Image 1 (cartoon, rainbow, N blue to C red):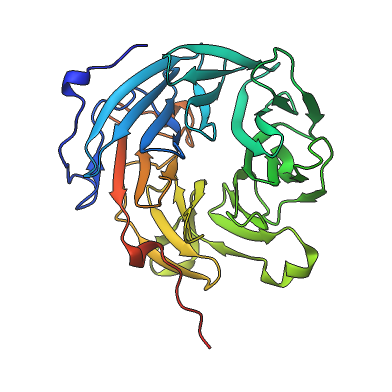
Image 2 (tube, rainbow, N blue to C red; image 1 turned 120 degrees about the horizontal axis):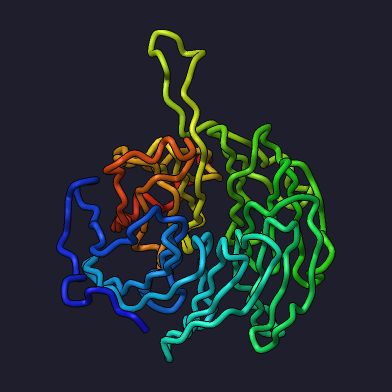
Length: 353
């Protein structure tokens, strides 16, 4: 297990981005692609384009300590934890998923695809825990970590761009705007297949904690709230976000940015969106209202996450490759930030009678 600069990796509050948001010391040395908190303790796993997954411990006042690090043989694209917080699972451009055992400090390959592994999620079912991997090889695979071969493989209509799980719901978003909805009691056959309610490429799907629907974010600065059951269809809606007026005098022209991540608060069911414009918003889908807008970050925000209690919100500020290779300019910020959530930012608005 390689520790990274543990002598210097505790942080003091740094107010450079938002007044009270804390900057994590020793962030990855290249763009951050994904982050995930443990469901058992305040440990944060962070994947990046320099092939590393770094694990930080977050203290009660936001101070952080680098605890461990392991590597893929290509950029890391997705990271998650198992239910009991003993293993970190990650997928990467090396066509592999790896697990890191927190207790032994050992990492090992647990899954393989024919193309990069874009998404990993842990499924905790009554039958036990399973890893699901989604790849650009147009498949998702389910893995029992004790076996070398996948438990089963499901063909997708296109490359997997995003997937999320809130048992028994799993939602997969692919290229060409296909969305497949699975009931994980029958994991090999989609429960429903649909086209995205948004007109442009799907960037992220995120399941409601209640497992009765999901949010979709697209590259065109828009989010759709979508319920699974037809009886709830009247509650479906979409809204614009992560846009700027190109010319204040002409409201018809706006600069449009990708919605990079959507994360739901584990207690209140409110959610965050972040974008290539460097902004983050908190939303209440039931009241259809915005709860908070962060001050703009000095670069795109590619990934976000709440800790298990919803008291800490982590976000990355780094280049998200939305402008290709030419957009990677010298001196681009690469930061990992922690925000202490206040109740009025994340609690639902009371319903109007």
